[in-house]
Length: 369
Image 1 (spheres, helix red, strand yellow):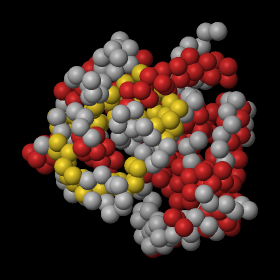
Image 2: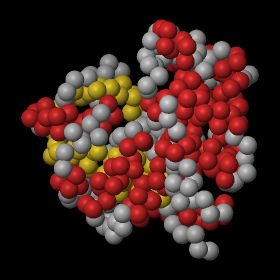
Image 3: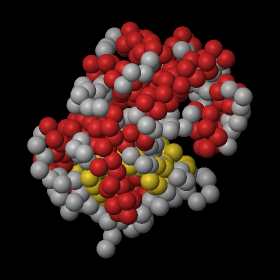
């Protein structure tokens, strides 16, 4: 019997995922909070996946079972719920979803960024959700995709392997089995601390944006983000942030990939240091910088990626002064307090837990020995 899916969010990624699942023959409900955003999809009954030009890229018309702004309707008779939203919306969508969840359903965050599944799970507990659901998160988004019209999308590339972990990790195989027919690319990500602390966007996106603020504002992003923007000094800052991330992971008993190891794994790119390795990556050439500082690299990646890693570091005795400096600069530029808005250990309810208790919770679902 085929898995029934709901896709939550009709942005670049959500439209691509909903259309692709439908093209693969699955029943798909598409939810978006604002009906106006999906009214054309509803009228057409689906989404046209345009030919992305690359070999094997899926294309065609994906007919959807339901298109709705009503969460109860979206989740009815659904097995797997794919949340494809900015991570800054995870807590809000958990509140909306909580009364409508049913026993046995699986919720997957695409991606969780850092501590996404932990935050989602806490909201369900706080709202006294009685359903026995499984929360999982992907380490990164499986598609390189783009929305290309009110009822159109492109998929340019599908990643070969994406780590995924459930909370607790004892349920990860259940999640992988449920989505295997559609997504054999997902692999066991160990646990949600591993997926969250291998979040490379936390290292590359905020710092590279913040250290090029003048250039972004004066050119509106008209320069090569990873090539022109990564000078030797900027690369040294990225290396400091990366060392802090890896050290935080080590304090939690996790061997996280370094940025150099990640570049080798993802792109087969080498270098003596991060500056050389980034400049040796052909795929980075031609990628423009964000056109504005009001961009997800700051308003999403700072509170949902940098803040939780730094907060875990402070809680478990790791110096994270580099991350703290980036967060403070972002606070000043955006005139906000990302510590207050972000995923801190206090907001996640983890501030009293020891490393062993936290580890036991993400692996087994309980802090009891």
